[in-house]
Length: 473
Image 1: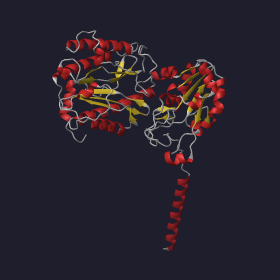
Image 2: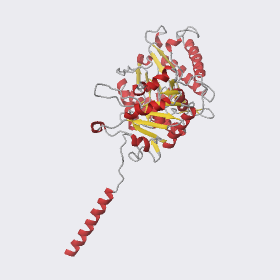
Image 3: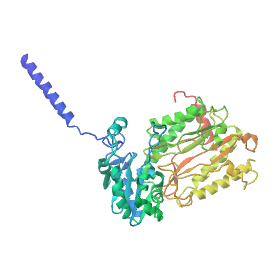
Image 4: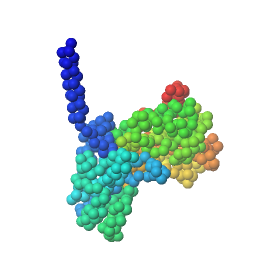
């Protein structure tokens, strides 16, 4: 019996030792203040710097930007600043698109330099012990070299010592105007080049690169659009039982986030009745009256890439005749403009077609007196669409006259916005309608990324009347 006990004790002791050794030899995962493939394998695959985008793609972006930069020039890109909601409460941080596009760093406090001689040089913030206790770890110099694959990296306190010499060796500077910081703008070397008009906006180059999406970027954009479509569809079903602007805004945000979106692309527009005629209405505090339409413009952000779509419908389940007449015009314009999307066309050309269609249609309805009426721009002062990508109004330095190319994503969003006080037949007053889709330009034409959510009258009414009472949704 004692022999059996001694044998069992040896087995147990051996297992405990083996288990202890196994535990001690596990690889320690270093926290750099943002997800990595080691710390978040559910988000990133091996070789990815940010979810869905490989380290190699980031390095290629840097090479392409260097190819665009003139000889003896330097690019300076600062991270987005932290914005405060109160004296001690920050808003949720969102990285500047250009800084993220080049570095892959999702954190504030850094300045990146890109040059033909230095490659990518990153100046990184240093973590203070008290900040780590309250806010957690951050990416520092080691992360810049090991994770972001910078060619050089220094702590931020070295910037005023090292950057002036880099600037003095350059004849022209390009910097991110949106995130420009006194930390480098107050340097005498920077001010000297600025005085000679040799400091320009880097966006003319970064937007050119970001305008055409890579296959990896398009995959993220399609996923972002899919999430937003699913969320908006569920909000539509929710609207018949809960016709409140605030509840629908909350519903769509919830559904986006549980599907993986990090945040909304913008505050949802939920305009019931006459509120739908306010183009960027954001109060979302009203009950939607029975028989009124609700206009919902929503989008989410998935790993740095946003979606943007709009649908308009009657939560009660049935369009009135006046609503349907206007809706039919906007829908026809939407579908016609989508058909115009192809390589070589431009947003400006598509916009001009939309204006012609809407002016003609509104005149036939008796809303405009003549096709050339100046009143039209009071009823629709917006463009037919915009570029879409890392920002909602993406690549703003790229002209709407620029011929579209495969890999560009745009929105098509015709609308009409008639205030209650506007001088039109009474049946049309207080109606706002917009139908917005995301469209990818392909080699042969286009692909609608938001095609999964209904926009035909019969489909919307069928959806609301057959499924809108499902309270579990």
